[in-house]
Amino acid sequence: MVEKVIIEIKRLPHGENLPFPQYMTPHAAGMDLVAAVETDTVIAPGQRKLIPTGICIALPPGFEAQVRPRSGLAINHGIGLLNAPGTIDADYRGEIKVIVANFSEQPFIVKRGDRIAQMVIQSVACGEWVAVDELPPSERNDGGFGHTGK
Image 1 (cartoon, rainbow, N blue to C red):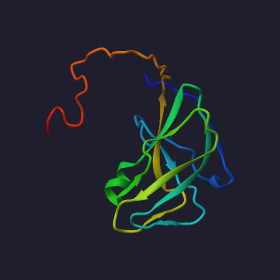
Image 2: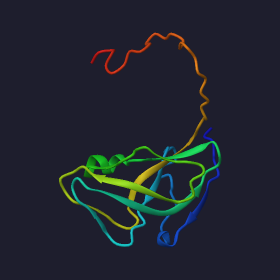
Image 3: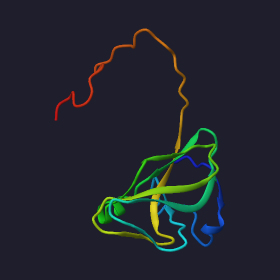
């Protein structure tokens, strides 16, 4: 059974008439976020732009929202997100905005209402540091950066 989390959402004036984030299939992990741009926004090759979504949310304590790229935009248009996954903390109340980057060789146009990213709601744990002189051994120990081969 999938856990349901109640999330308060506020639509901003420039997000009027746009849908709230929504799951596009019954078992989707992410809700699509749409662009709340006033006019078409061109992102040139190699350029990045901050795209508004027209919404603010209030997550309950113990949760975060991760903003992730959409695979269709990546493969079909070379569009990705910087700082992905971006984290929206439970105490953030500002507008959700998405850093959209154009990795292709063609300009990309973001239109009002375009699905530009997806948002996944995750539970989080808070870590507490305990200083020690030695860490417990593991099979891997300090092996990293390709230690298992190709």
